[in-house]
Image 1 (cartoon, helix red, strand yellow):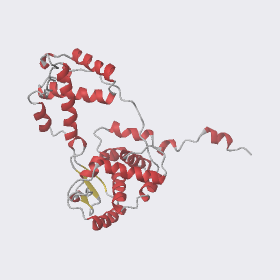
Image 2 (cartoon, one colour):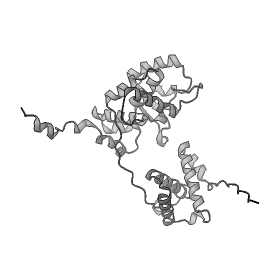
Image 3 (cartoon, helix red, strand yellow):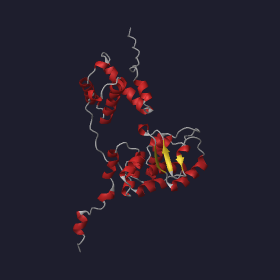
Image 4 (cartoon, one colour):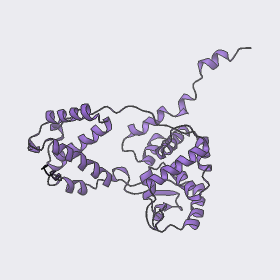
Length: 291
């Protein structure tokens, strides 16, 4: 007679781990990632006391994941953060005690659309709601999650501002509200009559989905015949780059985007034509006097 399959036992997080995550107001997505990765860590060291595990053992664990599961550099860093959270935040150990080699992030430049490409994409939206969604992401430099969380009360048309609450890092900030877009939003409001969120799903008072936002952009790009690989975040990148090309101070752009470090914002200097556009190409110079 075949043995009965053992019931899978749910891994229980250490006391204080979940409570500390909630106390520090981490986002639901971050909590989901941290708890999942830390449970993997617990299962790997299931026969050991977690308090006795040293950095060398953890490095070996991470190396095993890299070799056997080929985890990405981003996932490696997230797993490290989940582990560090336990030892530093829950147990209160010194940060200096816990040193783990991190994966170097690949230095990739963001995809940026020209102003004409952005205009074409927006104009390809025949649906008023869709047009307002893409216009707002671009004109305020919003993340997709920030857009769907916007409430009607977050739009300050009198002062020309958008209040973005509990954004990345659980920080509030303000961004620009285009005067041109105010009129579009008023027309949209009269037609759709949202109750709570600025953009709602099919059920009244529910958020518009992130998947729907991506699909709206995908369809608009297809109609506009844009060949670049475009995501909602591309509109945010384009907003920042265009501001820089217009001469906006990098510090203001940093505040509008909600970057905690200026180094994050500085990446746009590498894709901006603000300075490189002033350089005369030697090929053009070579043939400029040709008859």
